[in-house]
Image (cartoon, rainbow, N blue to C red; front, side):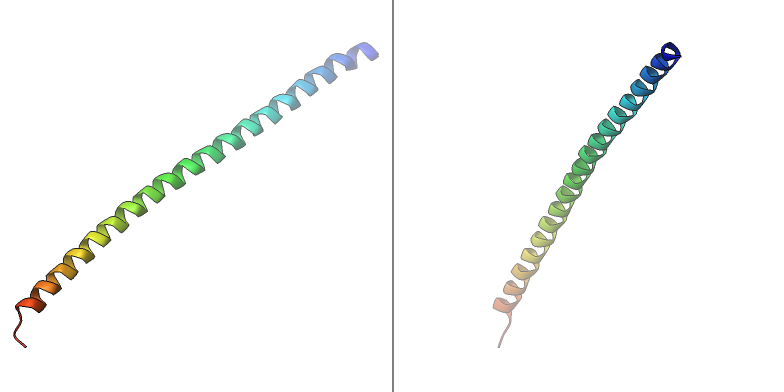
Length: 72
């Protein structure tokens, strides 16, 4: 009886180890890609903010020109 349960125990142990390793690797992979996705989102936000800043600077410059050219 001891000989039939030992191979079964080994197989079950290997299966549990493989599942554990798979879940660990999966968790690390998902964690890594979420960070990469956040970095891409932040880069896009920075690009949009720079575009807004440029537009505001252009707008303020145009207001200054109009202010200087107007007759009060």
